[in-house]
Amino acid sequence: MSWSHRARQQLLTPWRQLPLLDRWLLAELIGPLIFGVAAFTAVSLSVGAVFELVRRVAESGLPLDVAVRVLVLEMPSFLVLSFPMATLMATLLTYSKLSGNSELTALRSVGVATWRMVVPAVAIALVMTMLTFTFNEAIVPRTLFEAKNTLNRAIGRAVAGEQKDNVMFSKYGEIQAEDGSTERGLTHFFYAQRFNKGVMERVTLLDLSRRDQRVLLSADRARWSEADAQWEFLDGHVFGVTEGSDSSTTSADFDRYLYPLGSQPLQVAKLPKDSNSMTIGQARTAERLLREASDLQGARKLRVRIQEKFAFPAVCLVFGLIGSSLGVRPHSRRSRSQGFGLSVLLIFGYYLVAFVFSSLGVKGTLSPYFSAWLPVVIGLGGGVYLLRQASR
Image 1 (cartoon, rainbow, N blue to C red):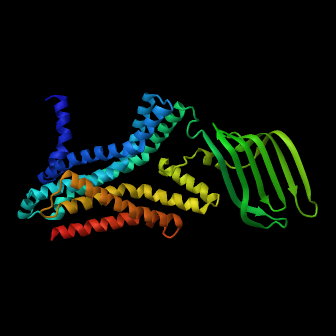
Image 2: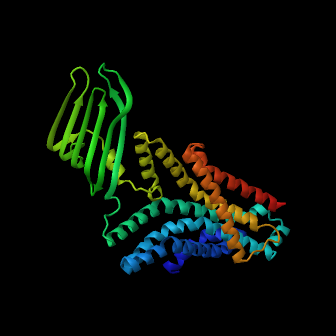
Image 3: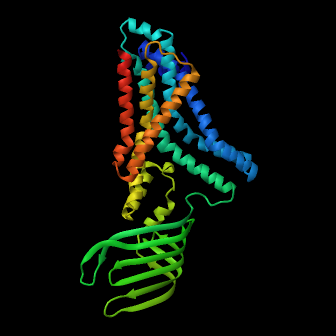
């Protein structure tokens, strides 16, 4: 027996160990699932990326090979969107076809429970859930980042992550009064007109850490010094005001000035603007920085988005359960066009509910956890209800 034949046998062993019922239903599901992924990806990619790239090729002279590369790099983000929709359509069409052909009726006649017929669909949905999470966390942020960089290089813009306008950071801490007491408040405000390749340009720093003293520092450039663990301000002016009985003002020009402010402004500048382009780790870092800057609304919004990064893949499980529960009903038969149309309606309804709950979470009406997970819980509850109805 050749090595390739032995390897093939080892790969097929787990499949052959599955019950015949599961192998049959899984084989029926795989074809519509692939068709659904291809169909929904093609539609969303055409609307979301192809038209814009064609416009850039025609109007801005974007090279065709660069446009194709950008399209390929953006494809994983559209694949992720298609996974839940394809899961819904595949389970709905497959079980509707089997029910319409009386094959599920035959299974019932030999004592196979309805819930048992749905198990392969739930297994497929769980696989798609894990695949969606993996894509969202490990692939999509990197490919979107590379796609943006490729496009920016081609049209002569700065690479994403190397340039950002209007970088602002507010630091809160303990403010010391003349009598030695402290209270919490705004201690530093940092503003840079532009961040360009690791250098802050046209920088202003306001130091309010002492109640009796104000320091305003303005510089042409500033950069974070890892060796000194401080900010290095270049070619600027520092202005200080001391209040109280001995009030005075001081000012001086400088070529180089080290200031003990943390590296948070640099982290803010390097973070992606869009939470969809962040990994969970980046989103948590951004949420912490916003919380430290007392931007409570921005931090709350990111907490909602972080929970949604966990909850979104579970939509595959919701759609898999709903689709199979609808299709498994006796005498349920739908064509591909009908299944596609019903899938679109169900998808629209679910995402509308998810959008409403997300908005409530951002506003603070619901906690981030509930705003992200309640649509999933409601969807799973609806799927269980439909399955029980089909089992009667």
